[in-house]
Length: 233
Image (cartoon, helix red, strand yellow):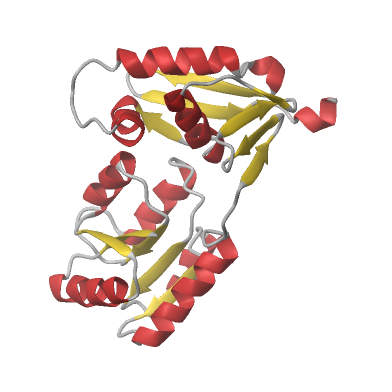
């Protein structure tokens, strides 16, 4: 379980690191909102913890960006000094899943994290999930389209799982290179383009299926839901 924490106070960050390390979580820390969003573009995380008052982009602005532009669907916990009821309500209305006021109590924090993970299903050993006409079998490492298994390469399968798990989220080519191929480089991304093209063809990720891989100029790719396939069936 990987957690990304936004906090500009190093003492607070170290305290959080100790709690998360001892609880068995993987942990990464950013001091500014811009750095936090950039880190999230490059790496996969399961849960986010935000402070409110940080340099250059407040935690509440980061939250709005996550929900509105990055289509982040995972759990978000605010841990902040701001204790006004209006702030708590604002954060929850804008998409925070829980809110804690500093100084927090360690065991309460652990309990709230466990509850967030439980509610989001992150702790489940999910072996299969369905998106429209597509079924992903994680145990068999295959993707079915209209109940028929599609012959995919290993990288096509991994790319397909990532896109189907994150409908509406925009992925940069650099992000895909790092997380699918394990390459951190500014070299040509034609490999990504070729695999996306092949995956689009094999899974028929076009308007007729209700889901389409959209190419976003000078950035990357996003899987979009175009129609309610069940409604027109």
